[in-house]
Image (cartoon, rainbow, N blue to C red; front, top):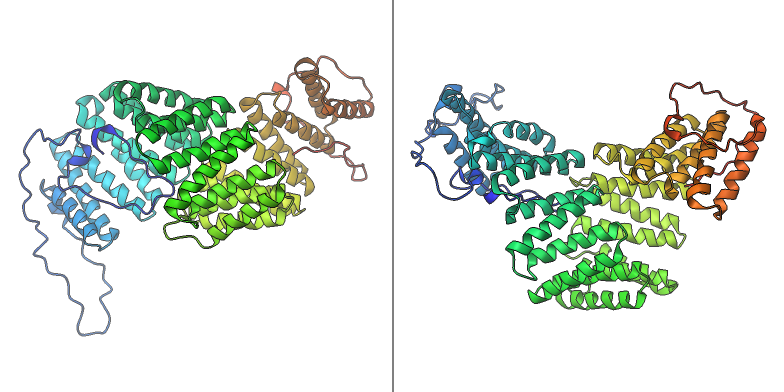
Length: 596
């Protein structure tokens, strides 16, 4: 990893290819020069050892364990570690597979460790060999086993010793972040990237172009975790650095602006997103990147569609479609992706027959994908088409597409958050068709994945908890529903604020649940608080205000008191130790309506 630059493995990348440089020091050196000449490695003491032959007196192989590759006593040879890493490289290059290479790399790490103890100082060779071991584990899909190896590797360098140690520490943190990302642990991944960026900035300065690359890398991780404010700040810094070090309309600036457009779109700032995309497109045209221009045209079409400028959106989509058809063929997934965008646009404009036709054309391409099409591309397209079938009020068809998409992704590393989103959509579909047990199961699986991936504080997670609570209500699991609504309320208050429609919906659901549990006073407190919010901040013209006011009046009549105009804060409303009394089974179900 030269020059403190990170190279993240994308979720849809093919299995990791492991390459070891001829010079074992290269991955952790800031430049290709060596500060000292190393003595050439001596021949391995193991090359002359003959392989044990099977017992010819019997038809079975010996059951005794295989002798170790090298004796432990030979590991303190300072030439052994580099030799074993060379063996690992040659083993992979010869196509023998990563298992034997892993054995060599592990032995190399042990040798470097023994030599480091003898030298009484940190060994960058040890750190590098541990990076190689972790990379081989990842190529085998053993990401959990790679994590402790990398955690050990980042403790070896001492950053204050200079650039070599800083580079080794940076590489370790970035590789550890990638590994956490492949496990779906986005919060841990981001923390590792932050540590790597901090070390890189201390070593190279705040305005080095390589720092810009890592800032963009970290910004992309924040976008994946839906932390758009943090992503925007990093992207702005990246743009500032590239303005200084890159020529106008450079490819680097175009990439930065595409990311900024994505962030602005996610935050609802469509005009700023459109400005960034137009500038990115001009840069790509100046650099002769026709395919990238077509991809940007799709993004521009999306923005025009969000701004209800439908004619301009159609024009952008058709431009991209022409390029993709002429350069990649009529059955390429890029063509299908444009069909999906057109289907969504024509639904918005009321042209339902055209919308359905484009959906069917896209599905035909996904059903017989051309060579090189990834499972992630097909799954993404099917998920988008399912949303359109949901708009057609065809939940069964939408559900089938979601199930196919999830099946395509279930064995892919780094796709836990995507699968969780699909499962949440499936939960909604199951709920719509009245399959509440299946709905709760899908939501439960999605919630577990989102918790594991570090998205337990996102607004999306709060919405999923609310939906799962609704499924529990339909199954008469009222206590579980109350816990889910309470957690959703806490998250949405923090992420969206008390006046957001999603938060208000959770308030209403929680009040209805408390009423069903016999916690009348708690339900009254919530409704008084909601009505106060509407009267003071949101206005009373909304139809929900009259509905909630009527519900509050019914509860107050049942409790035998009048409305308290000075509503208490919800900060200390929910007491986990409060006594919950259940209503008599003959009591009529609460008149409150639950809101999704």
